[in-house]
Length: 123
Image (cartoon, rainbow, N blue to C red; front, side, top):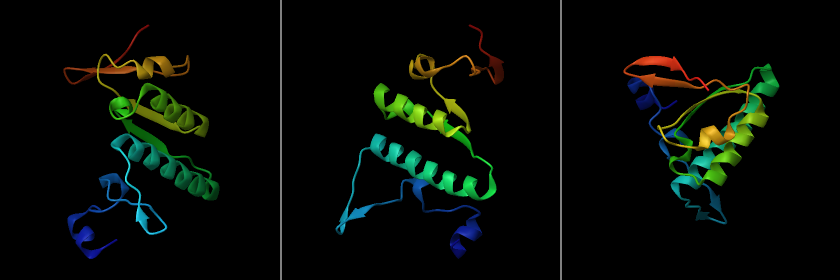
């Protein structure tokens, strides 16, 4: 960690801040926000597989508003990757978004936050 990051108490650069770049033959890859989100998930999945292979513990995933930047098809692909990974995943979505409903299985639990209260969804 850089000294300035240690002073702040958090990392200022990194994929979480979209400060990550790939180069091929010296040319920087530039993707859309959705493509960057998919790339970030795939890279984090690869990193998790390396770490969990060492210690046997999977990651806990927090995925915020996946379908904000992705088409329904790509959102479902990412959900499928995360599901096959076997880790526990928490998704957030705005009301009215259909992605999570279309990907839901009987093993999934759905909660709503209403006026600061966490409520388990029924049906």
